[in-house]
Amino acid sequence: MIKDITIGQYFPGSSVLHRMDSRIKIILTAVFIVMLFAAKDIAALAVGILFTLVTFLISKIPLKMMGKSLKPIIPLIIFTALLNLFFIRSGELLWQWRFIKITDQGIDTSVFMVIRIICLICGTSLLTYTTSPIDLTDAIERLLSPLKKIKVPVHELAMMMTIALRFIPTLIEETDKIMSAQKARGADMETGSLIQKAKAMVPILIPLFVASFRHAEELALAMECRCYHGGEGRTRMKQLKLSMIDLYGSLFTAAFLASVIAVNILMKK
Amino acid sequence: MAIIKTEGLTYVYGEGTPFRKVAVDSVDLEIESGDFAGIIGHTGSGKSTLIQHFNGLLKPTSGSVWIDGERLWDDKAKLRPVRFKVGLVFQYPEYQLFEETVYKDIAFGPKNMGLDEDEIDRRIKETARLVGIGDSLMSKSPFELSGGQKRRVAIAGVMAMEPKVLILDEPASGLDPKGREHILGMIKEYHQETGNTVLLVSHSMEDIARNVQKILVMNDAKLFCYDETAKVFHRSEELRAMGLAVPQITRVFERLRAMGIDTGEDVYTVKYAARLLLEKLKK
Image (cartoon, rainbow over all chains, first blue to last red; front, side, top):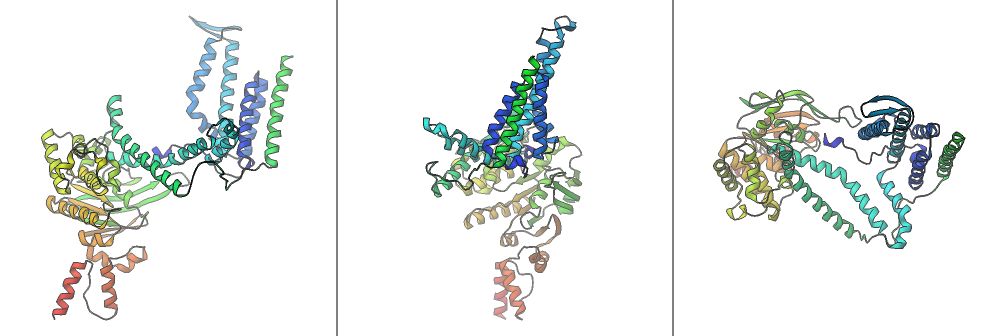
């Protein structure tokens, strides 16, 4: 049902990856993306695959979660594969039918692209699997804090993100309730044409809108009652601290990045 | 004939996940047509889950529900008519209001039934009178009304479908005493006027004692009993053991009895208690 939707798919745990500083994790995820895109051929990409697998094993997240995070982008993967397969015309011609030409380079590239996307999704989803949404926004706030110098309201943006994440489950629950209530009044949401279905959403969307405004108002009041006044001079209960784990993690990732570059250079020769 | 019947009704939340929870556990139940029954049970005892089976909002994990002799979930297409037969008013129903005017909002249910304009109009006027929503409010936006008025409009929206069974989940919660009285009074009036089955979920034993004829007690996902009010409150020890209470006046009279004053049993409304005491004093 509607409750099965998970957003911010945090997977509680105590692995090394879980304990790593969330700021470092974000940076290392960026490095990981660079690593994947730096890989010029399949051999270099193999290093990236290895990195993905090793980090997944370290995180102790069940491997089937990999499949789960890939599921929504299967259409994208298929689309990329077909695009590369049909539109790369260089290399040796293997098969031809009317205007469709398949070449060996086309196959190579499409396999390469698919593997790259899969690694990309699996690796980056590890970030959200091992970091709670709150830690994540915290880290984003800290990483973006230099932007405060040019008057970007970093704290406010991070607070908005935190609140948005916090209210997703609340609103899902609310939607569920309103849907049940309207169904009890005979609302029909399953049958009919697309336009009828869209119209049938009105009795759900309006109460939901009203509810969100109510929540916002109540929350604003509650925050003001606790003297919230923005980021100025605010201290944190949970200080982000770098530890040896972060150093090792960074070295580990750097080593892999270096290997990818090395393999690239070797293969060129 | 029983209007609502269940056999081995079981519902499990989150089957196959670590959060698995049996919310309703093999409930066998028969509610006669025309009953005015209260449903009590502490928080999380499965009351709300149970009532959502009566109009086919939830599908039993196992077991069956019959409404008016017809088994639910045999044919999914027949579920919508069941929802017109069994009207369910959720907790805080005012949060479901959405139309531009009160009139249109009450009309939502009857319109979904496919009734013609005249019939819809008749029903709206009828229920508006019953819940005490005057003509001057009918063209207002439901969002302009007070909390109590909103609640009454929302209940009217379900009553206007003229369901054979009306189920209300905590219809009086969060209202001031006057609002409570008003809502409960109008539900009682609805039952008397239409003779339809009414089920009232409530935490207030006083409200239950004053209004209903029978009580259904849920305890830990199981049906504890479904019996006449007097008989249920008679088992006050057991009720207390499951975290429920009996009405205050019943407790007072139990104490009196324990002190050796013979007051007679089954006192659960203040009105009855007053009459009883007056008779005693006259003697």
